Image 1 (cartoon, rainbow, N blue to C red):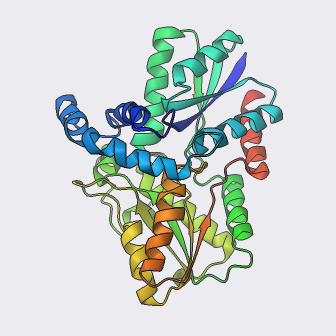
Image 2 (spheres, rainbow, N blue to C red):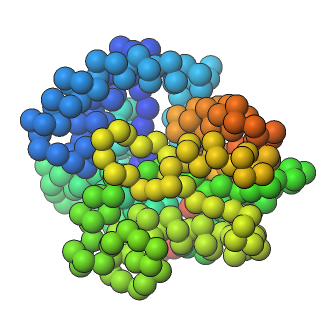
Amino acid sequence: MKGVLLVNLGSPDSPEPKDVKPYLDEFLMDKYVIDVPYLLRAFLVRGIILRKRPENSSNAYKRIWTDEGSPLIVISNKTHKKVQERVQVPVALSMRYGKPNILSGLQELHNKGVTEVLLFPLYPQYAMASTKTILVLAEELRKKHFPHMKFTVIQSFYNKKDYIQNLADSIKKHLEGFEYDHLLFSYHGIPERHIRKVDPTKSHCKIDDNCCSVASPAQEFCYRHQCTETTRQVVEILGLPKEKYSQTYQSRLAGDKWLEPYTDIEINKMPGKGIKKLAVVTPAFVADCLETLEEIAMEANHQFKEHGGDDFKFIPCLNDDDAWMDTMANWINDWSKN
């Protein structure tokens, strides 16, 4: 019997520091997120970062928390329900960090008699700190608890025609009536070394102006290429000239070289360049979360206006949009029929 496991990032149980701290510990101690030796990682995370960050993150989570709970969890639950209504196989929902975890999702499917699972990481673009960590943990759990289960993985869908169309349609819909000067595609940042680590050729990803446009096996795993390709295809559908849009990366940590240009720095420069009405979309996410709702819709909005901007339009993620739900269900149904 076949079944599907949808997996997203996760969220603390509450916005209070007592719940934010263990969530951040699980997240930041992941060797695919902070990819340094364990003892150094433990020193950085538990000796330095977790002394102050839980309080700061708690304040950020409190700004976006709803009566129903964490927006990411609420949206993911709605997605789960809508997808299940559209397919004939059992669908479970898990988070890489926090609850419900991947083990509970696999157990739920196992209890329903599922022996073949479609792993569906809810990330359009592949990255070590998102897709890979989900797949590695799921495989470890399969071997330990469900050795007779078989996994199939849905490939990164950054360039799938129907996803691109859903994204372009959503952007167009939310921009109706907003006479914007510029559309910014802001993707979650990652350290440049993550790009090089997953490059199977060990030589292609130079992270310059050319490498992402030259065909290579590295592109199957190259987050930067996949972000760039998502932007290119959406812009092509929307018919935007080069001067009307740009691409940046957000949410970096101090101390490492991360993908550039940086969202916050570029947004703060824009009013001085004559960009007074800015629209921002965040295509690294399919569900709104702390990084979209607080970092972009609130903080970036405030900073843009502080630096002289007039109007700021935050374009929501696809979330549980019905057209996107249909696309997800179509992919699942195509797989389940084979």
